[in-house]
Image (cartoon, rainbow, N blue to C red; front, side, top):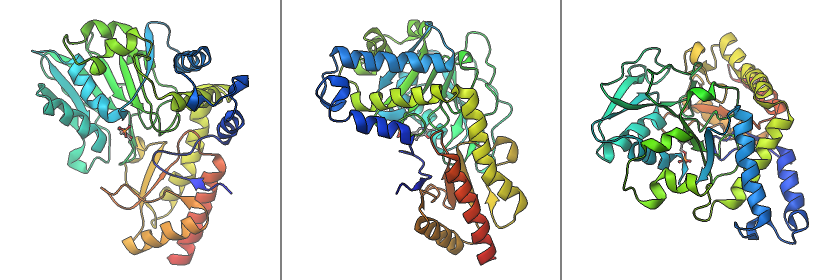
Length: 359
Ligand SMILES: *Cc1c(COP(=O)(O)O)cnc(C)c1O
């Protein structure tokens, strides 16, 4: 029996996709081997990766002025590559700090000796909201935001405006393709695949091609975006199996109505939990209502003992992954793209029952 999987990442994948992978495992479409065993230079694999890249851009409504890459090293390596490639001498890397991952992004710019500026932060209120105003530095190299805050559970509901000529760069790890965004407003979008679009091991990067003109010269080969763009994400061996599964998830999104349909489905799922927060004082949401995430939903119970009991009893009922991030404690339900409605319904029903029994 499959569990209700509220893990924050790696996370739940669509059952249909897993079944397809299973069916193709021993013999991928008559090639007599699995995708894991295939040369990444083979014709069959070339079709897999180019189709995944094209499907991603199509879902985002982007044309051939953008390029999609699958790299390794996680979103965490992008924290380094972004300032390394796009912040030249004499310019300042700008960041909006909305919680742990956003903080790590600007700290990496600092670590490699780049000028940086935190244009706004919600640290004053424990990252429980998204700043509505910000002030860029002089000579900004770019503005970097984190569209969804996986640990704190806040999410940008707008695509921020930037002055002409200032690239907008976003870590979209935990809400990528969960709803339509104005993707063409962004110049670089990246994230770990393991939250919303596939298994761990691949990092997606979608970039406006003109950004390549800005890449700092003399970078190490693997950390230079030009290397990967010029070779179609195949300079070296890509995370081949992960990309294959991602391709299937992207088609699953497309075949089920695309991003508009995802948005409606995901909002409905999240509403099962948020409605409980709004009608009970037993469960406390941790984010101001207007900035609540549709993907990661942290909450507190009256005591830590009750939180432990809640997590343990939920696990007994086949609902896993409900422990909050170790840095903040409490509970968190991640209700990503591939989580079925029934899982959210089951959790909501359990929450009401638990409240009744423990009030
Ligand atoms: C998980 C996560 C990361 C880290 O991703 P890795 O692929 O593990 O490096 C970065 N940013 C956000 C918003 C995340 O949710």
